[in-house]
Length: 417
Image (cartoon, rainbow, N blue to C red; front, side, top):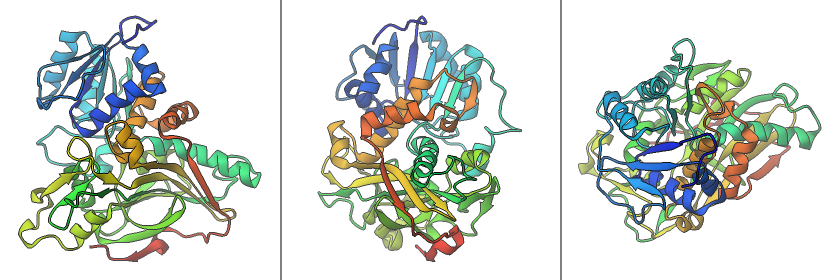
């Protein structure tokens, strides 16, 4: 680790043995933004509830004994014992309680998504993120708390503003939703990752990020979008319908999945419809269509498989994730990142986890620039995407001037499962 000019910078990294945790540590070691981040740290302390071991502990980092961070008291004890100034969570610890604890003890906080304590009853996504928005947002005046700095939420939040600027430059108008006559902004993602060993067949739900968390999202009681700045129930579960939209150079059919960036971006773009459409890998789709007879009806009991190292490296495919601007006058413009699995494997991860790690490091570099709870759209999006691009490569832009203006209701194509 380097030496911080502002004094001792001691970071606690929670969830180091998980897929995202390993990817972030690799990005810190092997990328330009990661090395810039490391130079700012006096100490990097790694902790996980498992004693899974890492291939290598990054130079200058310290691996703490296995600890389950399952309460504010446990986190408080770790912060005090190790004089922590920053907590970065890539596991699943309660966002509200952790931000309050960190703020009271003078530590910054960053996480990839809104979470609750493990073992507690799951809160619907819109209700979970509402805990961090006015009028419920805790007043935390002492430190910086960045929520949702991964791929989505995270990278896509910044891409919205980059895409607005790119589209405006192409059509020669001011870079505002009004000048572009935007009626919708859709986050779209297609993951084509395949297990070359053939172990992700129909008898298991195989996913490129946490399979249980993915199933939890797909089986939330209601899919939603945002209209007029408010959450709107789409009238079905995410797994029960498909919607058609552009994702990079392709048109995909994806599920409308509840995500917190849909809600937070609606604060900044109240005049447009916002949603997230996600096409999961084909093997996972096949499993959802015809789950094994012995799988049971409760997705929490289904057999799963992780499609990322160290659980497997026999992978191919890519993950495309970005934003689609939909204009009544100027067609549709998609901007996003197309990440091949081969790039992920260079970092000891897959494409999906590498995207998340890029968002974590980009957000970490700006942690401290704002006080209180905030999101990626509240940061310097240009600097954020510059850091991301140094890891993932430059974003892809596809502009279809002839696209017909379509709302989500008009994009629905058929029942998914």
